[in-house]
Image (cartoon, rainbow, N blue to C red):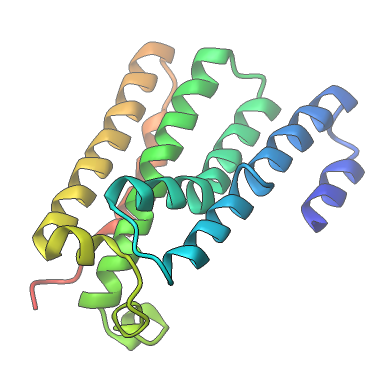
Length: 180
């Protein structure tokens, strides 16, 4: 909740911008965003979910905050509605790719690489992309989301004449270790 205080106390933002940011942040973090996703994630530990259910959980839980971060920059920069929509779409693909990558790294990564204990999801019998789609299916789903995110940025850069593809650098984070 400190984020709301940071927004309110920022002297560089006008009141209209502050209200727009607070509105978007409260949606992303609240009962329709991160909170809903976290509840769904906890419930999925007891009752397995299907692929669409897992996507919805992560779209709310992780994706909503990524989308807010992207949209906040657009709001502060005075971007038009079309640009905001494109950045939300990029955030949706990136958020899902991020979560698929996280699930894959729990299987493929090491504690040295990930900074956390691996194989934890399987031990907790959590619904994950590898458990639902298989290892190759999860890798394929990751590739689809990364490609879709890249395409959104490419289209936005062409349409606007601005270098939005620079955001593609964060997609580099989503590479997987060499085959195990």
